[in-house]
Structures are given as structure tokens and as C-alpha cells.
Amino acid sequence: MILAHCCGFISCVFLFQQSPNAFEDKDIFILAGQSNMAGRGGVKNRNWDHIIPPECSSKPTILRLTATLMWEEAHEPLHQDMDPNKTCGVGPGLAFANSLLGRNPSVEVIGLVPCAFGGSSIEQWKRGSKLYNRLIKRAEAALQDGGQIRALLWYQGENDTIKKSDAELYKMRLEEFFIDIRTDLASPTLPIVQVALASALGPYIDIVRKAQLGIDLPNITCVDAKGLELMEDGVHLKTSAQVCLGKMLADAFLCLRLL
Image (cartoon, rainbow, N blue to C red):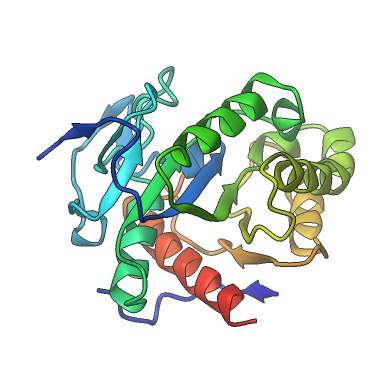
């Protein structure tokens, strides 16, 4: 299933830390990929403007797993300690969580697990790699106090548009990654919502987008970010676009649950 770019639906810093044995009943979502998932909304010249739209507001029922594997109330930038070599800004995670809470009364507490890393290629996410192992470790830690991993949200591929050989191998590598993640998390039907690229670092975006839109594994859907507004660098989504993407991801996840 593929969902096109649409923002026409309506959705509805105090920090605290708890040990990983708190918040027993929560819906857990893994956020992974590269910079547009980590969030660069509002970042210019390595400075974040600190503008947080209401759709990305914090609330006690939306939690974030920190780099030290502690739960805290989620706030922007979600990836501030997970993508430390770059300046992080607004990403899609909080807009996703707020939209989901506003539209699904069965969801009471959301646990977000940031794992994205700017500039990473799909090869850097292969089984056994540093990023892959970090994701698995964080996902397992998120489950220690209970709850359930509801989905993987995945936005990556800009780096794989640079070389034609990488673009041509992208579909095979991405499918292997999804299969391995499901296997190692002991969740063979884990819902996965991936994003088809809105931008690229190289000339082979069409090959990568075709691969993303052509994934034919069960319980995986794709939202198309093409047309979302980009920042001046031509690569990263603006804050408003990140908000739109978060709502699109929530819509896609809810559609998956109805299948």
C-alpha cells in the first residue's frame, strides 16, 4: 500500500526521568533512518531556530527513550542525543505521536525510540553493523518494563542516490534489513511504515524511489514525501513539512492496523 502526500486531515520544557521499569503500558514506535527522520526542521547554518509548532508539543503521555536508555517526556529535538554530530531540529516523530493520540482513543501512552543517524547509507544499517546493533539494543531496552513495539517508522535513502551501484542494490538491501529487523525483534509481522524520498544527495533518486515504492513484503506501507517543502539546502524537510509527514505516518499506521 502506498499513501500519497496529503495533509488534509485534522489531528489533534518539563522533563522527567524514570528508570526503565516505569510506564508499563505503552505503544512503542522505533524511529530510524537518516537526517530527515532525525529531524533538521528549523536548522540553518548549524543553528536550530527553536520554533516548535503545536503539533509537536510535549505531553506526559508521549515518552522518549534517551541515549542512556531512560524514559523521559518527549520534546524536540527528539534525536538530540542520538545524532550528536549534527544539529537536530524538528522531525516527524512528535507530530506522528500527537496525531495518533488525537485520532485513536485506544492509544494512551506512546514511547518513541529515536535511532536515526544523519548521512547513513542502507549498508550502514545491515545486520551486525553499529547502527543495526544500536537499534536492536534500544528496542529491547524499551520493552524491559512492558509495552509493545507497534511499528518501525523508516525514512532513509538520500545517501544511496549518489552512486548508481548503491541505488540499484537498494531494494535488495532494504528488504533484507526489514526481514532481519523483524527476525531479531521476534516480530515477523511487525508493521513498517517507510517514506519514499522527497530529495536526494545524488542523481539516482528515481531508482531509489522506485525501489521504495516497489517493496512488496507483508504489513509494510509507504508514504510518499515527494512534493513536501524543502529547506534552502534542497535536501531537508522544513518544519511544516515534517509536521505534515508526521500526520501522514500516523494515517498510514492506522490504515495498516485496519488491514
